[in-house]
Length: 89
Image (tube, rainbow, N blue to C red; front, top):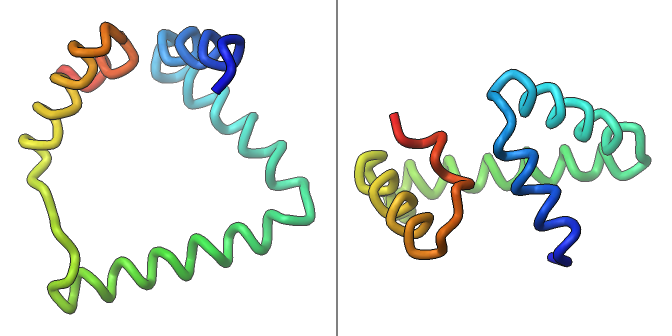
């Protein structure tokens, strides 16, 4: 990711939740207007179905939220980024 995009992402992640949601929806709307949106949606549907089957078959490795939350916070602290501070709940 180039520095300009990285900076934009950091600034966007610092926005309040409602503003981040509005920004995300606006960005997604711009993607949905492309011809690729149908194939992207189909690809995600296929991926979700595959993951559900992996879960049912016991093939997927799951991690409890508490453990993942601790790991994400540790990663954030290690890298000196504030991008995950909204997870501190």
